[in-house]
Image (tube, rainbow, N blue to C red; front, side, top):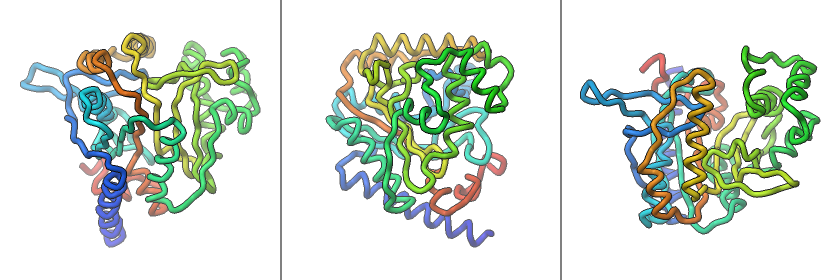
Length: 315
């Protein structure tokens, strides 16, 4: 087992080199934005690990280098990437570690579809030359759950979950429609995605846009957002990036309100990031990819601890 782990760690080092070559060939510049920041990335469902400075100031271990990278984009740096350890509180398990390695990059002047293609090419560095399929969030629900969620009420979705004998956590009845959709996606749909090829899930409901732009498809307002799956495991989350500062601030306020509704503390909004949006973020697509999960799939392992030097319980 020790020899196997050493071989994987050697291959891990090789993959870092291949990743950097991937970006070098595309003339994408490597940057290293700070891991700790005074303000937080605000998301209703991602909890951050706080860091105390000088025994009095609370800062935050970042869950993504996104805000810092977008500040650089607004200053005219051009296409950039970062390989970074990122941190999420309370996420520890077979496919989760509170500290993990992420590859994140931003490309100016390319289409949403081109960004999907490039991200699939990145994933292929690890898992081989596999084809990929793209379906919308709505199409995926039709194919694997047999429902058109857009026309269903929250009460009808609850009945559907009960009919399928899907257990749900206490209080989900009081949450919004997205909580029910996430449960259906995680339990009934995700296990089917990307079994023999890469699967791209695109155009999420607008309520799940996060930092993505929106557009209209099939009379529904949807987010220009995609995720990539292989063997039922989510690997990447990408956006056609939102540049509207007023809309972004509204989403932050809404996310904090949702956090409070879920019994969580609200997080300080990053005014430096909003200032960068006001200054002018260029039209760009961005994506974050889980490096450790790719290594897990590459080496046919079932647990992240087998492909990283030490997991949370050993650190």
